[in-house]
Image (tube, rainbow, N blue to C red; front, top):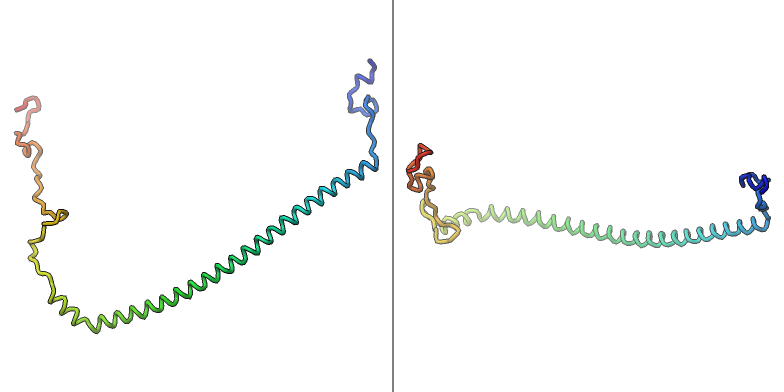
Length: 152
């Protein structure tokens, strides 16, 4: 074993493996590979950009359709609101015009029931009786226990 064998490899002059030399052909091949990789990345990005532009155009057309629909719906809402306002005015005018007849009709067909009588034939409208609020032992008929040690 020689002294050079004991030396670490990072000392280039004493290393047992010969140092590789850079050759121009190898560097050209490496640069070509880098360029091909870059070209491939550029092509991929162009395809992605074209796809995104196509999606953007489709989205723009759908947005235009949606905006047109909103404008149509707003026009319909405005028309219906104006029609409703006209009908409300017409109803108010008719109520004013026919108020005496409506009042006479309501008086002619009024329901007169004495205030203390009501129809309790329906199950949900059964009459109720008074609520018994006596103490529990009085309601059960038991005498009040004043001495807990003595039960009657």
